[in-house]
Length: 381
Image (cartoon, rainbow, N blue to C red; front, side, top):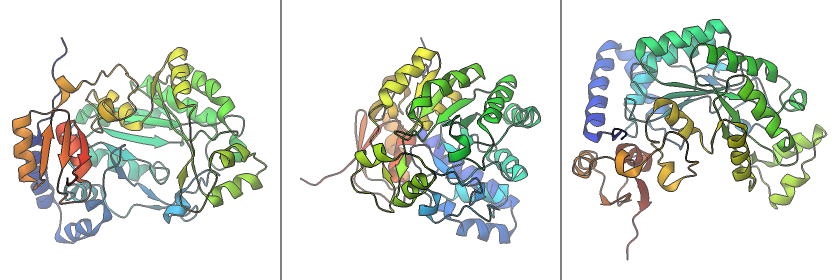
């Protein structure tokens, strides 16, 4: 029988407090002020975890990318302004964040290519490893054997979980869709180099754009498997008016996207993706693990129950991680004490928690992490 993997909410709260004091003593006052002002102190976790920005702006300028609609640019890339220790201190000041392997997932690469500034990336991985949280990074950059070995050394020395997502969404149209990014073949080489160093590389097959790259999916999955990928995260496409105009200008057929989304504005909109279940099943038939979300892939690598609780109210694919509510949820008595310490008014109902108050941004995901339970809103009768 498998041992329980229950999180210990009181320990997570106490550990954050302990680490906060440690880093506070290690940093000069100037760094403390700088970190406390950073947006990371208030950033709400997402399904994939709290996003860690290594780079601001992305020079790859992939045709389907939506970062411009978020206020970022395809020019003038800059390293994130915090040092590694400042980054960790900012994170520990975020009330929605909890450290350790059973704490909040960390996701690097959400709004830019994280490996553009390689030394900054390594510094951040090294510093974040002091917290013990599962770390995941998504990249199109080439990872050499030398870099893979450096990352392996950090993982072994710090005893952390590091989950690499290697993005490949097209082979045939790469020169059109991703002309500034490293070629897909180099990314498959990255998978091989990571696998050779004992990592579990995962294909990041996102976005799948209906009518443009969906006919290449099985070819890409098979190639990734042959290159050492143990699984695939499948994701859809977020469209904006500007992105579709750009795709049209490149001679790509966006008619299927426009058919599925009748009104498209500058605000991002998720394109309906009914094929997702079929693609996940095809990946399983090919012989690699399919995931519908990045958090599940990160949790599998870390051997923990998914903090976003996809196994209760998310798109769980029944992967070998075998998350199980009865074995993997926090003790009720301890959880009540933890929620009280955080001033969260909530009612625990078996596998769900009804939240009546949200004292800080990201309360919902904080409660998911502490409890491994579904969170629902309180409604007055």
